[in-house]
Amino acid sequence: MRYKIIILLAIVLSLILGRMFVSNLNKTKTAKQRALAKTPAVTVATVGTENVQRQFTATARVMAKYRVEVLARISGYLNRSYFKEGDFVKAGQLLFEIEPQEYQYAANKAKADLNNAESQYSYYEKQLKRYQELVQQDYIARSDYDNILSQRDAFKAQVESARSAYRDAERNLGYTRVKSPVDGRVGMISVTEGNYVSMNSGPLTTINSSDPMYITFPLESQDFAELVRIDKSANINRDVEFIFSSGQKYKFKGVQDFHDNQIDETTGTITMRATFPNPDGALIQGDFGRVIIYSKSKDDVPVVPQTATMENQEGRFVYILDKDELPRMSYIKTMGEENGMWIVSSGVKAGDRIVTSGLQKVVPGSPVRIVQTAVQDKAPEKKIGLFTKIKNKITNKK
Figure 1 (spheres, rainbow, N blue to C red):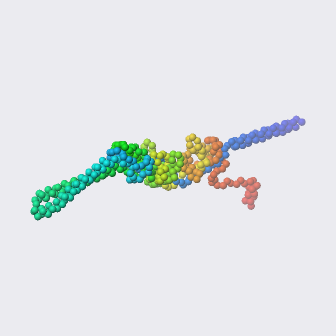
Figure 2: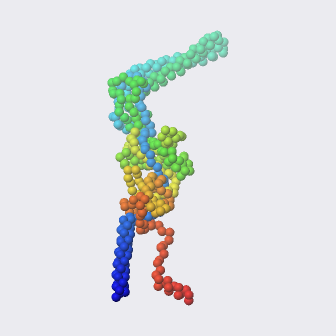
Figure 3: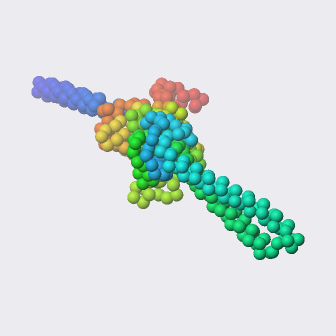
């Protein structure tokens, strides 16, 4: 009887222990499942490269190719202006008139003096020819001939002097009609009609040429070195795009056709210049914006999907998996986009593994569950069942 009780107790104890083991096993399995459920599921891709045209950005300023200050070159009262402020004028177009009467009188007098000198010179030129024949036949003294020759030469010099004075008077008279030296748009009139002007009065107005226009920009020395490396030369004309401060892109492309011969020691930049067509006058002297300059040749650079990036106050970043398959943040610098991919200048390199989806739940340094890899080196092996393994062994023995 006692033996039966012991067996019964052993059975009951075994059942209790088995129940506890199964319960603990279920709890462990549930805990693992919960932990697995909390681990974010992500997809991963390997960073590749793409052969693209590199692009670099810089702040920029619009400058007129010609900027001319229109000055008075003589003194006098400003009689009239022949344009409206803001008008587009052509080279040689009349802009102002400075009272011409005084200069017209001076020109008339100079012309009269020239005519008188030429008349005297003509008279003594004829006399000299007569005296030359007479002195050869000894009808007159040699001294008389020399006197006429001296008079002729003196009036010849007077003619040259009078002619120079007349040209100078004509030049001053021409300055009374102030004309535009270049094609361009006229600015505000600084001196109004009726005021006395002189060479010391300052600009009467300013003309800025409008087509083509220059856009200058300071490019980082590292970016310039990259351009030279990619294009294998510094002296290459490159395509440039201009973006207004409003964010709107200018519809015409320009050509970078100049770079300075030195790096600014203070800013570490080199000044470059591009020439843009401006038929519609959209580019205005002094405007600011930014430019994108493109390399002439292409370069292999890392690219990442735009969907694999996130942004915060510090910038744009991706999650890179380290050797322990743990994600870490890496801030990247981009230099453009192409076909839905960011072109990266720093922050990642070819071969890095980055998280491409499920980024919102990723915590740096915490495990992630990789559910898919964008690029697989080989297809996964198929699992072979026990019956198949036994069958294969029997077949091999035969």
